[in-house]
Image (cartoon, rainbow, N blue to C red; front, top):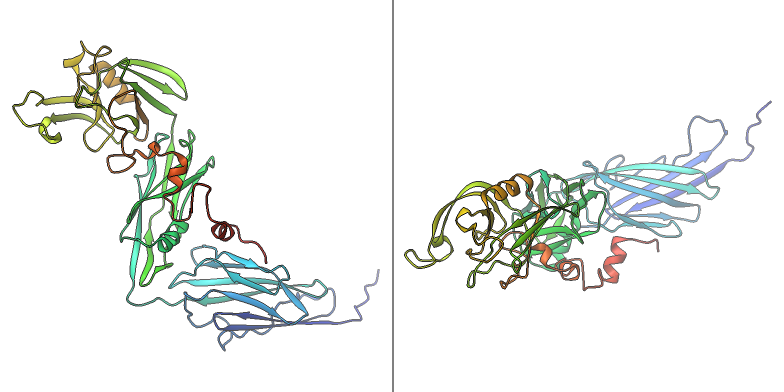
Length: 419
């Protein structure tokens, strides 16, 4: 079969204008259908008055690409920096304009890939490179994720500690958008600002069992506020094991331990006596200490008084920073399962405390019910994060306007639509 050359030539010119100061003129001709040279979006490129990569540009300015004229349109734009971070953007329905909806990073190199088509649908493509400047006299906000990498219980929150305080809500929103937590299996979750330098992340319910959780930051080089920019962060990977929940009923003086919702052990215990009632609510295992010397003076009890004590304690599982433990209390075995006689800890026999110590991990859930004590505060004395219901937790986000979730403007930003 003979192939006859095409008798018509299609000439298309599309001008791509980049708002950072770059203009790109794209011209091409379509000749023989078997030509080795494909249609190109641009045979000539002028970026800030030069060809090839542009001079450095201001990261405060948005990236904008437009198609001028009636003979071509933009079909897709992909912009990434050298570390692989994508720049979010919106493409208009008619293909004449694309603009970024997330900030550019300072001191970064960007590659922008623009796809076009002419009136006949012939595709074109062009790659543009540019660098952003590094502002002077700036302060960097570094991020440290916690806890340390490893396996945890399903109640373990992810923490983010900032090296500098961030107070303004708009600045907090910039930070929060850049701090990412992914899990497999995926679950709904969110950040909560504990204070100006601390955020906690938790899902709506406990983490799934045997999950992989990854925390990372896209904040590096991003402007947070005037003279305040995102700094460095090391990513973090956690895993979860079985779902272990220990429920202590202070009224019945018993602890029930569940693994994956199945009761595996019931333990007689004693909790806080009047005046020293154990705190109610959900707590998370913070540490396991084989031996602790417990003294009343550390919790404000004067030496020589009726309530003073100085005891060697073994198999101590810590659940608050103020000194509440689940631990061996051989001196109170006669009251365990019968009465509450401790100074706030949950006491049990040495054998039961050893079993508990060996079977729980950091991040496991220890819940106290029916105590006359107050509920553990969400923050400041361990991880009481789960004592906030989900609606109140979400209100601690800089991206959420109220219990119903993000504002319409924030929803539009999170899910940009073509206009």
